[in-house]
Amino acid sequence: MRASPDLLSRTALGVFRLNGQFLSVSEELARPAGLTAAWWQVLGAVLREPLSVAGIARAMGITRQSVQRIADLLAAKGLAEYVPNPAHRRAKLLRPTEAGRDAIALIGPGHASLATRLAEALGEEGFAETVRVLERLSAVLDTLPPDSAGAGPAL
Image: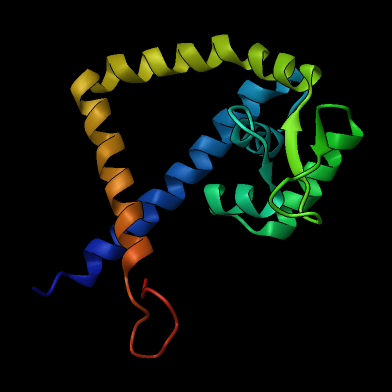
């Protein structure tokens, strides 16, 4: 099966646009809590369980260096803290402090409002289908072998 390169280009451009839109909305939602979108992203990654910087980077699909910089800022501001990692002596785990959890909680009402508005505009099933398609696309990209030039999945 040979798909049109135009479909890949349109998909990539659509995702790039969505990324910009989500970053803009996230900045607006995070601002009243004294956070940036990037701070929110890293804190959100460790709400359920502490993770190493490398673990956060893998989960978020961003570089370890950018997570390290943000994690250090969050710790310096008292929004997160490093704790010992029983699995790895040198790779400490990051977890939110109460202040970090409180900041995330301040985002909740705006986040819920946006979710409701999107569900109303897309319909519940349309919203769920959007999530399924994006998750499937991401999963497939993770499994693609490198292209013939060895440069990873061709975009």
